[in-house]
Image 1 (cartoon, rainbow, N blue to C red):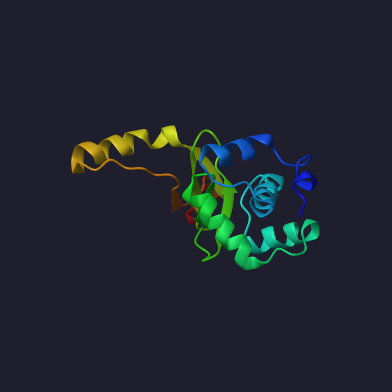
Image 2 (image 1 turned 90 degrees about the vertical axis):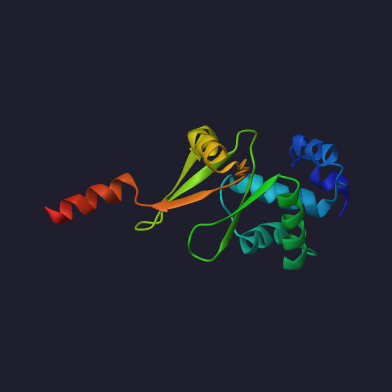
Length: 154
């Protein structure tokens, strides 16, 4: 694949971020990043493959997984499992965030990393352990489901 084919659609910051990490910029890496950016949320490897294959038919699922693994290792992509056993991937923004997953309706809410700062500090003081929560999913019950449960017991 010609590098110029991706340039008009590829966010220049991806190229810069890969280079800052000392990682080669390849068409496969750019197409995976572009797929993640195009979906601006959580996407499976299969969905990335379907999207990427329309633009780059030679790409395969093994390449997608290898690329995702590398992008996760350098902090550009986060991997999540929201309780279904399926891995979802998303671009990591400048500000880290985590997820609240409703076990009833399966809604996924994003929560800013700052909300977990007291937890980080408590673990550091109580256990002498400095946490590095790049990505965290907390499971429970969302506000709407809590309200519905309260209604049902009345």
